[in-house]
Amino acid sequence: FGLAGLGIYFAGFTGVYLILTLFLQFGEKFTSADAGLGNIPIALGSAIGGTISGAFLADKIGGRYTLQIGAVVQLVGVLLMTAAVPSLANFTIWQMVPALVVSGIGTGLIAAPIFDTILSTVDQSQSGSASGVLSAVQSVSSSVGVAIFGTVFFNFAAQGQADAGFRNALIVQLILLVLFAAVSFVLPKRSSH
Image 1 (cartoon, rainbow, N blue to C red):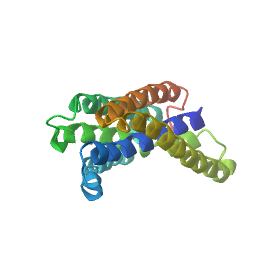
Image 2: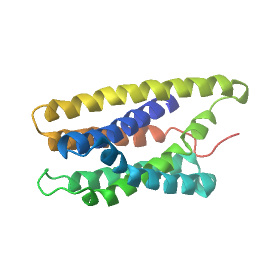
Image 3: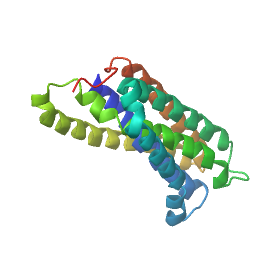
Image 4: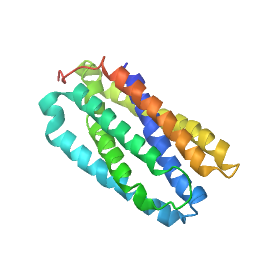
């Protein structure tokens, strides 16, 4: 189940943040540099969430609960993003900054403890091999996420509806976050190592 959770998380995480950049470029005509700057709120939020998670939260309440809180926070961020992009008319990146920060905090809450939480289910003598498998699943899942989210987005963007493509990609992310939260219930509450 840990591998499934990791795969679901990284498919959504990688896919949705790529689509944000593509939405800004194709839908809003941002330059690639400006679209990259549009991701700064996510990075700031991730730093905040990762610091909270890594510094004390995962140790205090356990990996599973931290992952679940992160999923809920990221879900709220995605819902806020959906509300911030009703259409391309009168859009400004500032409409999305709060949503991006919230989503980033959720990302940081998950990214910090996910590997340790999953690896805690493996015998320590197998942790090196298990870590390699987790890295491989992360890479493959990220690629799958890019393919899925790219297909959803470009299905609409090719018709001049980048906003609809972005909103539909956010629906996919919501589904993946719910699946991730469901899978997290079978992960250990606390690290056993």
